[in-house]
Image (tube, rainbow, N blue to C red):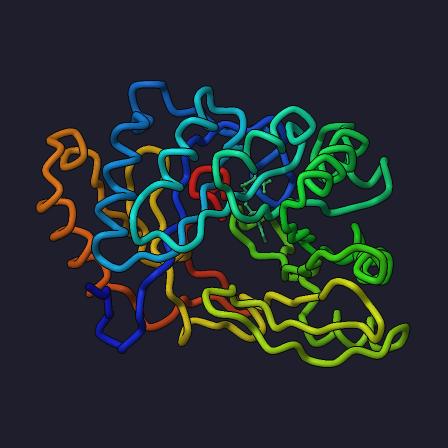
Length: 325
Ligand code: SAM
């Protein structure tokens, strides 16, 4: 079974958000005033989340990323991940996290079958880290990364690059890959919350690569199956790789293979589409055929591309914590 949309794209990747709650308050993700939290009754139960994951895999989804909010703050997450890992036909189970709880949880994540971690880390300087995340927790995240490394969990480090905030650290982040066998990905800042003058924050992928080229020689890397949208490179002699994700300056919509489900059961067939489909009544009814029919219909309606550029953002502002990135 395969999910193919009307533009011939094979949809095989589900991003499943398990909570809108987060123990950080990243400035690019949510406004300083915070966001209204969903009540517990609005959040899908693990049974419902499992049902949607199972239905999606039966339709041809091969990779699931569990995300949030911060997925590791939800009680029972390890057991849930263990159940997901057992779904026949699922080839990759990966997790996006801010890394704060990895010191306690890395061993369990490995044990239940999580295959890779994407860890958000936007600065190596404590004061900049605290300014971006509104939490003074750099040490905890670095210790979490080390804990994951001790478990031999493959790691991607995601840095959202923002001009005037952390762009001076691009070279330091690229340099990490010389010592560590990890992937560091530079993510173009996206105006999800649409703060004033957001255009000033965007550092286009081409500029990021030009700046790295002034310090290091690098060559393109051939990507593997089910790898993400990053263009990837290896600095000469480096153990790890660097990547650039250019959602604005060089969108990759033509290769988009994603479907997103929020923690309250809203399906988004494009990150920047304003319309969402509420799957929760079908999940509550527990009818896998109805869920599959709905997912197929949503894939058919997947738009050709988002409307975001380096200067225009036509979507309604949202917080990424609700959707999961
Ligand atoms: N709490 C987890 C974490 O920190 O990775 C998972 C959720 S977070 C919303 C998922 C990803 O979205 C992170 O890698 C984050 O950097 C990215 N993200 C959120 N807002 C963004 C923005 N405005 N531009 C680019 N990436 C963004």
